[in-house]
Length: 220
Image 1: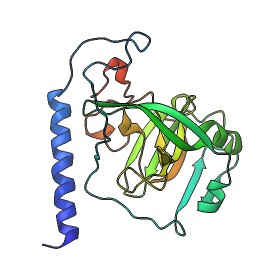
Image 2: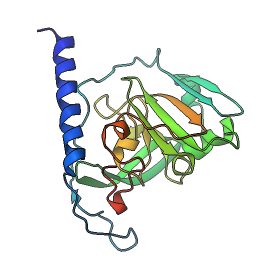
Image 3: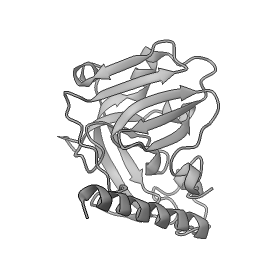
């Protein structure tokens, strides 16, 4: 069996497993938590490594070919190559990761372009209410514009002082730390601003549409 067939079989198996988790409500504790009282959301365990989770496909995009499109309901659409993206203001931020598969990693140091700096340039239109993040592996995820615009949201190129690896979504991935990490799309290709909400890949397969770890919004 060739690599393409293997990758397809792995992806199908992983999707089926996670759809089953959503139907069964796996990992849900039912215990409320408030972020000001407890740094670890309900049902989570703290880890010190960074587990690799994907669908068995890791797009390897050479920097010379990488492009990021920002379009939809914005005043100024952009299509950035690597040099143009790196020429934008760079920010260093620290945040925690909370994965829907029940692990959390504290104090991750990121470097990249703050979402607020990007929004200042593209200027979302008044009717823009939601954002869809598109990845080079065809993955998508949706979130409200106000969540994407939160302080701490970043388009990251570096983690712990080193360029993001392909395993973890390099060369650029979204970081939306206040939501479960499936909302922080890897291998970012396009940022689309829309008026009406449109569920993404996992949201269509039983995951919660919003994904607040403090409310344990794992599944819809």
